[in-house]
Length: 287
Picture 1: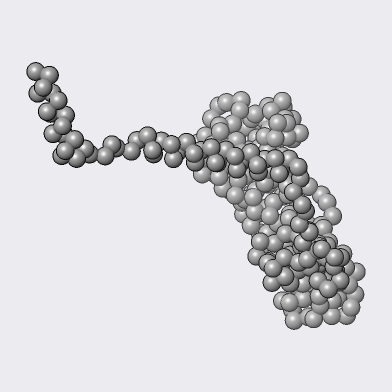
Picture 2: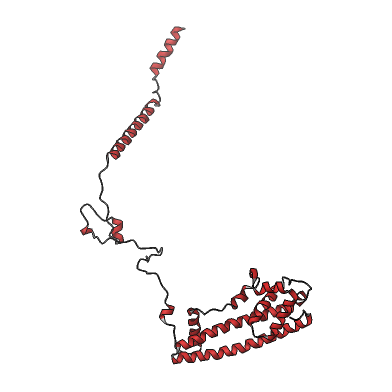
């Protein structure tokens, strides 16, 4: 592991950027040729072989995205090289993401320049820090980088999407099988067509002429075309009869009290002139 040398590190950063760009152009050209081969396989009807090649194309696209990220981080370290060249045991927060990405992801690339840069950074920040970055303790490495390093089989949906785009781009008539694109859609038999949606209410198969005696269909329900039977009218119970009698008696008592109050509050009729003169005459005699 070579010791830290600021000048050498800056040179390696610039070389890494150039090599990353060159490798990306090479990968893009290879991907274009691979897509053409897939289109020819689709045209010949060799679908399974085309699927295998498309899976490889997808993995190469992910690797290409990783190279683009590493190029971006190298350019960031060049722009902030003053912070990177500081004499400290841990990188500055402004460059830590780029340093962590290079240390963690450089072994997954085929660039010698990037490997040398990684060794310089590991020597600068020490074995313990480098081990934590390589193991990605506490998620210190950016998730954008770690996602590109996951090795997994592409899902069938993504493979079909690639195949469709390739077929469309090269004018090949091909569509994914129905089994791959068919989605489980809930049954619409029980779904209401009204704007409010919901589930339809079960309708009764009974017609008005077939209903039992005493059972009819309400007018509003009949207008809507539903067959919901209307319950027959039931006779009032004894409690309801007693309650009705008590309510009637209370209403009569209230009416009587109201009329009595009106009689008591009726003003007295004015006396005539003869009565008034007689009262005055009696008062004069007492004097």
